[in-house]
Length: 231
Image 1 (cartoon, helix red, strand yellow):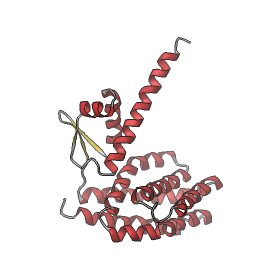
Image 2: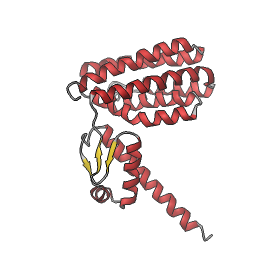
Image 3: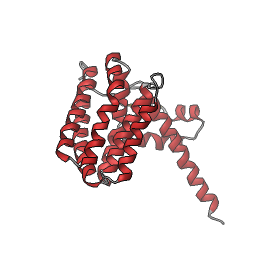
């Protein structure tokens, strides 16, 4: 019985850090907090109604995700990306996704395939009004994360987690700045991702690598043009 208060206290701090992390991540990905903006721990703590501890932990997590930069004696700021950064991130994404589709073709279970198909069903349930950038980008990241989980490769999934939030930020950034791309992606998203479900079902590794390469390189082309001149 004597240990209960201590255990509850630890859990509360962890929950607060999770909430602060999620709220800050959402604001950064949605570009409500602009790249380069300074983040003062005291200001964030006061605004969010928490102590500095959860804020400090949240900033450390977001730094690991590549969304925040913490500089000695200067504090934290929102990460900003040049074209070279985008190319680096997508080159790493390509390697990780090729490995993910290969291992998913080998290791995916029926439950994994059902999980992928469930995400596509969720997309199909959305009407035109509900197919917002926020909703579809969330499904996009959920689909790719589920594909990584289907590989049953723990270290690969942890590597994906480092990139995931940055990729999400790029999706939001690109889709909100190019209406023609936005409409095109909304119309083709289902078909573009059904391909990978079919590939995993058929265990077709060679086709999987070809399709994922095309998928990632096409994404880089869409994103990188918005960073021209920022090198």
